[in-house]
Length: 221
Image (cartoon, rainbow, N blue to C red; front, side, top):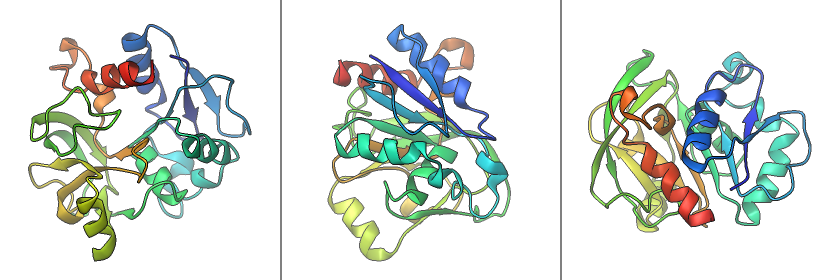
């Protein structure tokens, strides 16, 4: 599977995602600088990493969402190419309009950095097909602006269409309806605040995140 990790000024989790994808697929992804206007031919997965793109000036992800490469990412997503955005990547996807809602300041106004319990809400997507619906997993979080917010109609639509992928199983950041990750309406774009790429091998303490990348490989291949 040929993949690409987008790199912005201030990204600090791009290598984490690249290592996870390489370890699971056996093929290192292309590291694509944000000023590029085209994706490499044959890319079957795009990953938008965490970090603090542009130092989180303005709103988190707002400047990165206007980078030239994001037009190519949006076009690829419209063609059905899977796109995953983790942490700041989730913020970028909402700011770019690929996912609804916004990520606001944590309810406690503190940076949260720890493992958290999650519930898998949708096990039928290309990202979650290796999990069971209702299964409890643990992924790390590391964010200050992870409070997912949307209007009631949008939240009802996400719930009704099965587009909530992961939900916090404990208090973390005040996210509406404890939402930790959502899908677009076509199911090929996932944004989530927790970091599955940081728990892919036993040396990380556990490997709950590995199945996300294994399922992606199986679905895309």
